[in-house]
Length: 357
Image (cartoon, rainbow, N blue to C red; front, side, top):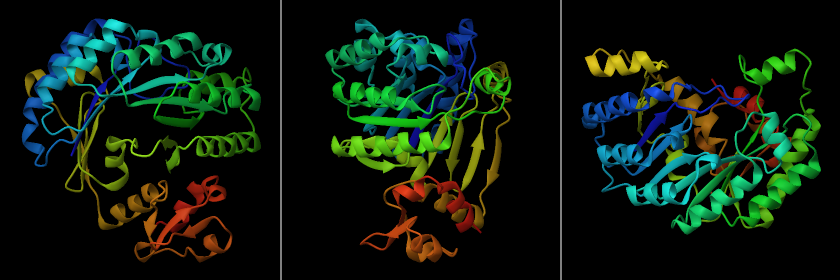
């Protein structure tokens, strides 16, 4: 079982972000108290050992190191093999990193996004390229041997030359995992508004696909395994926690807006910090839920399985896959699983929709 803890606090919101977050930093301590209370109240839901803990956001590194320690201590780490925390490079100090390492965090996910200062400024990040490099160096000095960084491509005005430079900069860091995301213009975000107003122009689809293809080629040359559409890892450093989401392992989500999945039931906390805090304190928190049907479970297995390099067992696929195989967009592995080819990944959403029932 995995535990996810959502920390919604941000010093400022990035222009592209649509995750639940807040800049009400003065509510951090009250929120942490509520999180610890929820952990205690839901302890009986964890009927399997907790193998992974993921502290995400928001910006978890906007919490004090002592607050991170209290959260991890409340969960308990006797069985946990992987404890990940997301980190903004601008928050990294030697003391902070050493303290969270001592608290039990053994994997960092660092939100670098780009090594081009002009692009970082364009998308509203509050760190620069030098801070990103220094954050990784400090993390190594603090004893972290398992680090992931986030990179984004298809940013407005981003060139292929800049994207190639970002990949080389990432590889020079000597990290073990890279998560990559093509920019999505989510409804209601500031970046989408700028696009709709004509103030920025999205990268065209051909360029975005070329950036992705170059990414796969270069990281493959560097020894990274492309184990999920957006994720690359050196052998043995695949994210164990994210595997919970892709292979149906149960997980409990703690905090405002966090989702849980236990026994074919998906539930989620309200995405409002004050509603969450008061509901936990008063014992009145209303958590929404849905029970997944057999059809839901099948469709999710297709949607998530085809995103990974393990794919989906051919015998489990009910839709007509033959024309996708004939077109070179899907293929069969030696162990009888169906996986997406590189070409197929470019239109994976269409393929998945076609194979759903």
